[in-house]
Image (cartoon, rainbow, N blue to C red; front, side, top):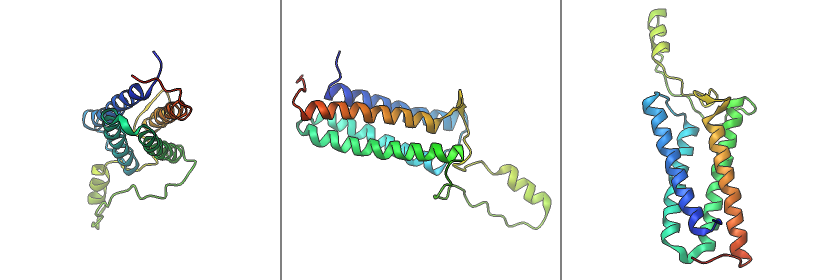
Length: 165
């Protein structure tokens, strides 16, 4: 089975939806509150899924669909790589990921309660890893793989070696 336009977009939509559903699973089952960069990535994964489904339905604008999906996936890969670098401490985060804690206290006991009740929502501190890889790392590897597959499909379309279904 060779990779073609329809298979690529079906695969991309399935992968994107699985990633979004997985992020909700981690958020609600393991109580991992996503940071701002995680939320942005989630929104872009939803956009990728929606656009992939539209591309499967609308096959008449293949070049446009491939180019737009390539742009979206490059943005997603860049954001995932940036997030990975922030988590690894290689870059300082230029976006504010912290939330207001409402520190209106004048004694240690109240301050301690506020600190203990505050959830870690900072992008620089990964909340989950698997074999040393964070969710942002996995997101980067998956999105860059989809970029490469997208480029292969684009090459096939542009040199007219695309196999019609």
